[in-house]
Image (cartoon, rainbow, N blue to C red; front, side, top):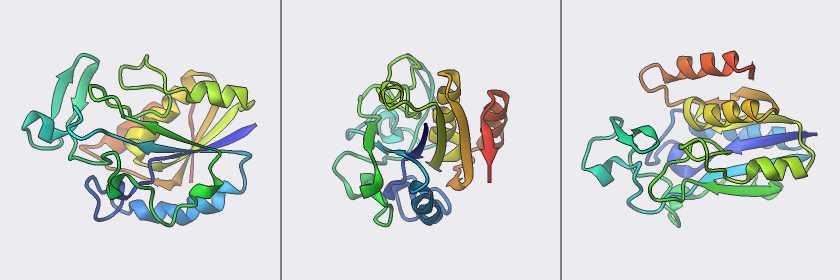
Length: 197
């Protein structure tokens, strides 16, 4: 069985948002069109408490630097997708009614969560793997924001967990922080993830 996993298509990742991805809103029509083709549809939602440890403001630092956390290096992001704010809402044109499951991630104050499957410590699960397995899913397709972070980390974890994994690149957009898109694409290909237009 196939599942579509739509990653973080939220206002703060779209133009005008707190961590805007160039052309982030352009993925919405393609994702909406894709949904009818999958028997299982999951939406993820970044859901940070105010003052999250991944926010540059939490450390009194400028965005896009890094800091060492107990789980490894952490990019310091602008404040984004704070619980209960308009920025954390899904893009208004995204067909959220089609979702079987909405999974919130990044809600633990001391640890970020790029992947839909694990927190950034790479061991704390979100519960998505269990949900997909109980639904009989063996193949996943990922789309959404941003290609080089949350989409890529989710795809790598899906492949590592044994799901046949592909990324619909035309339904994703990247931050591309210092060449991060090329690096993420290389890592996904090396892990056996199929990258499609």
